Length: 121
Image 1 (spheres, one colour):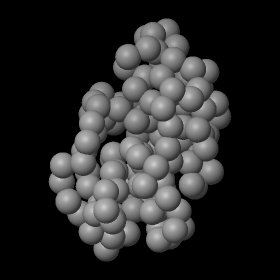
Image 2 (image 1 turned 180 degrees about the vertical axis):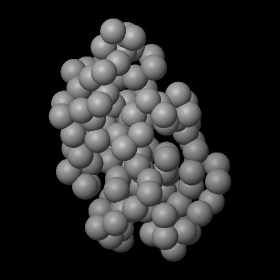
Image 3 (image 1 turned 135 degrees about the vertical axis):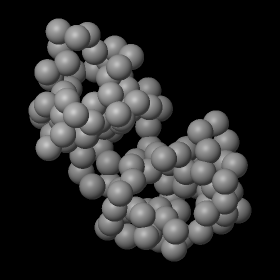
Image 4 (image 1 turned 60 degrees about the vertical axis):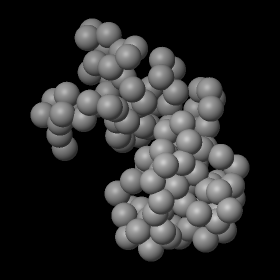
């Protein structure tokens, strides 16, 4: 989920903040979400008012990013690490290498149904 913070307003949206939410909404669902801070204000905000259940991170083109819950977020096309989060594997991982996903903690994808039965734990 992509989060923007502008003038203490929490907004969801990929390229810019569109949908307004409040902190309670975020905290109630934070343990289920991977929150991508899209601007410095969002990172600062969650660092100050978030709680340990809210998992967040910031990255651009970094090969590896450590999330607030100490999971490694792997940029598409980079080597997958044991216990990491594979980002958009459908864009770069060949069919022959798809088994590598089984060593990941999670998969970040636009097509979750594609992986639901193959890698259900």
